[in-house]
Length: 270
Image (cartoon, rainbow, N blue to C red; front, side, top):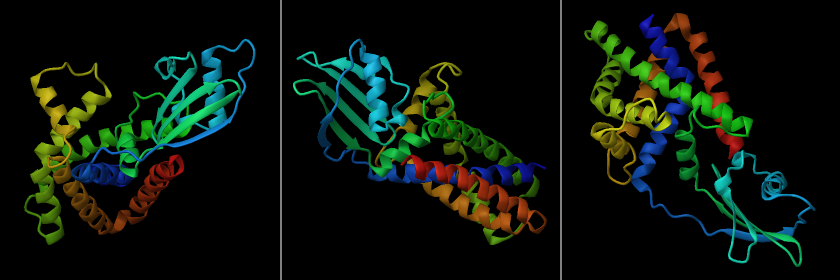
């Protein structure tokens, strides 16, 4: 039963686990640079009696920025000339919109997020996040599920290792020793991920602060190492699950379901 839970959790959330791996490895090459914004203007008239929030909601619909909903108060402001300025941040980047008059128009500055930045945003989006876009909300719930599945896989993996540590086979050894080598680091990242997703669950302290700093490290750090370990575990785990002859159909079904759901949302929202 423990092996089945371990295997099925990994297959269901395989796309999310590989997303964590890619983001971890990509942290090695993070330059934190953004492409120059694309600027354009288009006609837009503020209707009589509309307040700033109503205008913001109209602009969001006009530009198709459902990923930026709901519109928060901090996204609505004014510049020195008292023009309404709307600053929308979302998974795909940023739209800074200035509502102008004489003539009535919008000035839009669009900075598209890099693929790495987009994936980084998705990997930290969990159920605590509330989005007005049903795709992002579904992703938030599914990624929350994947985060807890990873914790279940780590715990069940220890049980499986203890029960089957005499089991032989090159593939099993690679999977086992990679998991054991990455276990402590995985625990650090899992605990800090839960802390960042649900800040009221765990009290802040020096240990948790240290875990958070490790989790947020870019460049040469622990994230690339854990990312590589997750890739190795994913590849060997898929191979081992395929060898479970009686459960191949179930395993394939779970893998396909997770791939279509998570992979489809990643592609669609981009």
